[in-house]
Image 1 (cartoon, rainbow, N blue to C red):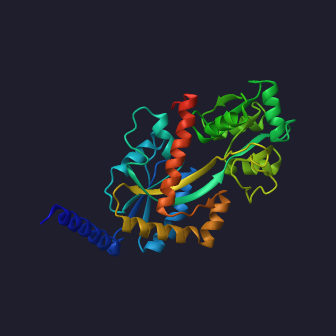
Image 2: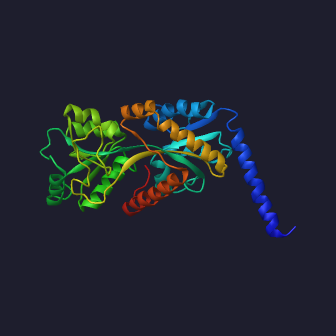
Image 3: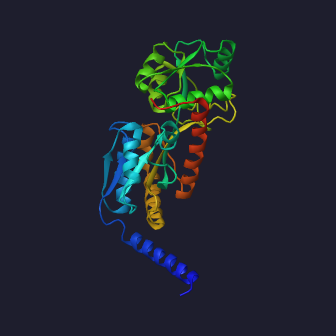
Length: 321
């Protein structure tokens, strides 16, 4: 048999195998790894989507918390799992930042995973204490430029989304604002509320109740469109900070080499779940919105975010604590 014919036969055999696998899939419960502890945003989202996704697939989905090492333990387990559609993993920004933050990472966000689809998205918010004299982004940038290093912003720790968002803001506005890292978003927000620091870049979910109460003043959201939860607050672009976008997002992935037919089946089920009224309402309660994509669109989005955020990390010399 000529080599070209053998190659075509091998491809056809693989395609038939993939189709057969998809037709019989799923025939057992699915494990969804959450690489962070219970109660965090990834864990909450995993538990919100598990039941409606399982209903679409006609099986059970078990959420497996494999936390530790900034998500690396869970991602390692997911990367090494069998590529049969029975192990999935949900992750957020560390999916694309850990490779730049850690010297010796045992998994690669592009090589080791097959994107199923994006799941949810939410902006960060630029906030100052409610009694701060600063009432706009223009005033904030002006004050930072007049007195470089006098203003300070709180983050949830080195390499966190609060930190990366803050550094991107500084670069885009050509300002120097002192970074004060805390051990977690709670302490960072607490000192922002108490005016021990001048500003912060928390997630919308963390900032929202304090903005509503007046304890914090929201100057802008970091997405390219306004949030329906804070419709009166402009985007940074509207406030004069051109080409700025930073959002917290979550993506669902399978191990690399999962058959394309199974990935397509999972994507269709995921998007049907994300479109449901129940999930839309539950996401809104968490300050998230459904982020619906094809696997290919998710792959391109993740790859672009990996390039963009890794560039910030390397330029700033940021390393994991």
